[in-house]
Image (tube, rainbow, N blue to C red):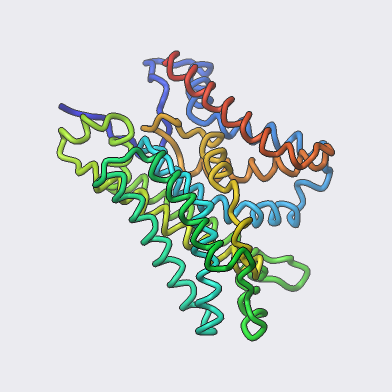
Length: 342
């Protein structure tokens, strides 16, 4: 039995021989709807904020999208493989809080970085093994670990914050607040944006140029068929959670640098909703099997743009969750209609 291996691309519309320009446009629109949505949002954002397209504003937008965007890249793998991870927000709080403890103890930023990456990877591995070895549904596993991770960090901090101490404050803060090539009238490139772009490019390479990437699409498209072709489905699923944990670890490091204080009960709350929303509006099929890391990158930026538009339109900030929920529903409904048509 053969299955179709997709390479870093959304589920495509059927190819018709001798396509007209209209047919080609429809096919392009089908595959890259998120680009059209992005263009519409840019027009709306420019209407509310005439300075939206200035370099300073765009670099700030990219900076603000970084932490949730990196987490969303990992969530993309999990969703393409036909699963879900609800624990990423609590995981970010746990890793970030303990990372600050490591930083304060060692006074070494890079030891903290290695700890965050290793600990995030470890927590992701726990999720993956519970799903594949214990045969528990991903929704149940990550719902349980979401509660567990948050409970652990709140208990360790006794409900209070984990603050970066004064001796390393300035150097550590520079990780998130610094700019590359700043000077001579040029505002520079935010370090955070460089992290986001670099990780996105690496993830695009993994999903388009490696066997693992093709296997992720195959597992999400048809798990039984993937297994019959010799793919180790459990290993692929576990690695999706492992990579997600690793990316959460990097995000936690950057988050701690940006905030310089991890408030255990509050940090990372609703990050799972933001990550899923970025994945959904980026065009990844919520049922699995197709999607783009590039779409998630754009989706994370669009999500941040939407928040800015709501503020500019003087919509109460408490309604952000409602708007994100509606966005996810609309994206899933659109995907379902599109799949029925093709």
